[in-house]
Length: 276
Image (tube, rainbow, N blue to C red; front, side, top):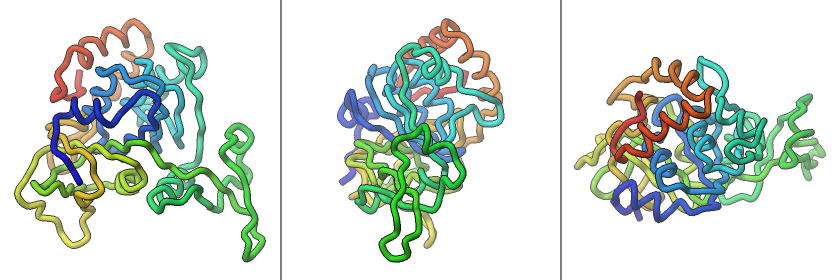
């Protein structure tokens, strides 16, 4: 059942060195505050999973938290490359980064399989793709009923899933509104889950088709207003488009990156957003 605690305590309890960690959120609800707390606590040797690693993973990788990345696309949306990710892959700085790249469809299927407790995901995919040549986790099996050749990959079953959401009620149920990615599946697939929310309310006021994570699926809930900034939280605050553009210059240079992280993350409290 969900336990209410500080973000510091939630990360300290559930994110251990060497853990497999999924931080999900699609275009909005990206858990920046939680990611920054992981950085402040100097977690190391993490295997990071995310369908679309963007700025928060660039920061985690650049600060030496990650040893492996499982993903389907990595970049600064609408701007360009993730320079800290590239530095780690191409030059091993600050530590070498192993990458396992998949398609979007495969990553979604891997989360669904993990949520169902299955060891692998099966899909029609990778036909004509070179990804199987560079990713040893992409294999093929024959359907026992039709003989059809299908792709198979390991399911995503992280040690901990971390997401941001609009609000939780006092019983520990969490409401996610707006564009929804694979947050629900990531939480259900994980051994533990940490959810940051904008606020705690008496009643979620959820409509019949809303995405509600029941309290029994969640390990820890932490109140973190602005916890998705500079991405947006539907109904609370907009996307800080200017910051995504600014990040390109910040992340290109190792020293500039380190100075920015020291000022805006390391020396900042857990409630501070990610804007420059």
